[in-house]
Amino acid sequence: MSNQARGAWIVWLVGLSIYFVAVFHRSSLAVAGLLATERFDITAAQLATFTMLQLLVYAAMQIPVGLLVDRFGSRAVLLTGATVLTVAQAGFAFADSYGTALLARTFVGIGDAMTFISVLRLVNVWFAPQRVPLVTQLTGVTGQLSAIVAAVPMTWALSTLGWSWAYGIAASLGLATAIAGLLFLHDEPGTRSRRGPALSLDTIRSSLATSWQQPGTRLGFWVHFTTQFSPTMFSLLWGFPFLVKGEGLSPNVASLLITLMVLALIAAGPVMGWLTAHHPWQRSTIALGVVGAIVAAWTLVLAWPGRAPLPVLVLLVVVIGLGGPGSMIGFDLGRTSNPVERLASATGIINQAGFVASLTVVVAVGAILDARTGGGGYTPDAFRWAMSFQYVLWALGAVQIVRYRVKGRAHALRLDPLAHTRTAFS
Image 1 (tube, helix red, strand yellow):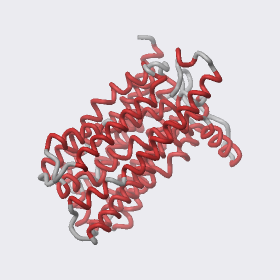
Image 2 (cartoon, helix red, strand yellow):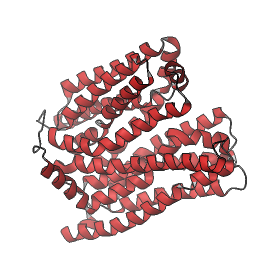
Image 3 (cartoon, helix red, strand yellow):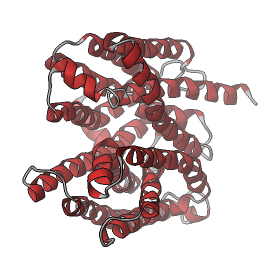
Image 4 (spheres, one colour):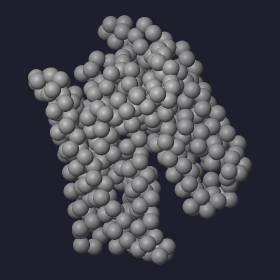
């Protein structure tokens, strides 16, 4: 292995460690819900605000973070994100009021938002193009793995050490990764810190407009929009109540199915990366196949007379899990459609899509459930109506994917008539 290749893996692993810790912080509240309601004397609706606020902040930060990465480089933004996460999690450890805790989680969302785009830019700069799809998938998979890893140690720490010690120790992880980043991260081979053009309103408008005008960026946007929201909605908030109240499973079985969904996502990541790397002209086709499989699985469950049997629900969660690695195809489309100096901005635009769709579905499902039940207990019929809202976004996204892949292929062939025989992008 050459020195540059070895350096690429070192840089990626250090950046990945910062991203891993960021997702750990993001997921750390999942096992602390009951303790949080007692500590801050809050209702279930107020508890849900923590999650919704983090998602909203994360989505809103994607384009600004992309611009910052293009201007100041991945190293500076990653180190800033790790610092913000550390301070915010430490603040959450000692927060004694709901308002203070909300403020701390807001900054957790800000620090979290700075990590993924930065790591993806490092991947695109340090690795050969044929390796990028696989390493990108491995990056996303590691983030999902962190969400699982967070559960056991945080549960033990909260029950054994108490709230402040548990979150205080968690905050120290960010400090450790920030030190590693300070020592080992380089924006590019041979360059520790890279700077782009100074940011002005005209520069920002030009960069975003030029990125958005690329058919590949728009195609990546709609791929991410259409593939991500179902697994995110399911794992974030509504999967557990759907399985328990809508399908009559026990809480333990429902938890196992959600874990199985994440495991399926992790297993599918490398396979999706290999397919993307070896069939670049068919990336949007692969994405449409993922969407079609998810739609078919949901249709089978929602159309089942009465409650669906367990094997059908197992099939559902496994297929939903494909949406995670499927959404990563969007970033690869953005990569091959934009020069390196605009890459992070384009990635931010694409990454925002899935979270906007996820927030839309999460809110819509809750509103439809309330409308169908009058605010009472959730029923199987109400869940069928609520989960059917996903078809609206699937239809919108699929139409846009087909639309922009036609434009994208035409654009690629205008630039290179033999593109489809080499490295076409749709």
